[in-house]
Length: 106
Image (cartoon, rainbow, N blue to C red; front, side):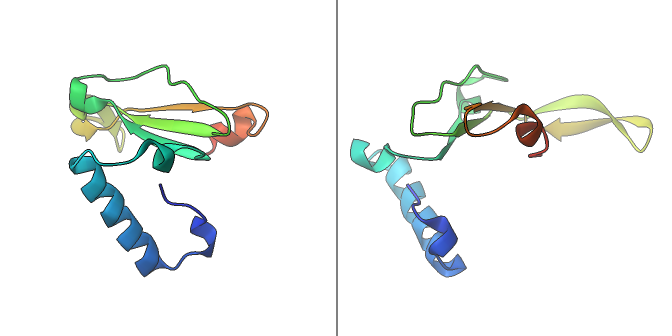
């Protein structure tokens, strides 16, 4: 988990992300390292999911989940086009974030 990110330098954040990634690949993240997050990122797309109903566990304020990337027909400059799309699901605690604030986080 990356803690106190507002107080960390960019190189320090990069090394922290690299460590988290290596630990995740090795499946060696200790449970205590994954507790106490404010925002959690989840990837359920690797198992084929597109969207999900995510559950937050206090003290989390939000969880963002990434679904499976797929090609979709979308409007691009007023014309139909096929683009790779990454569906995101967001669940947040209304005691911490209003619906308007969450909707503007795009």
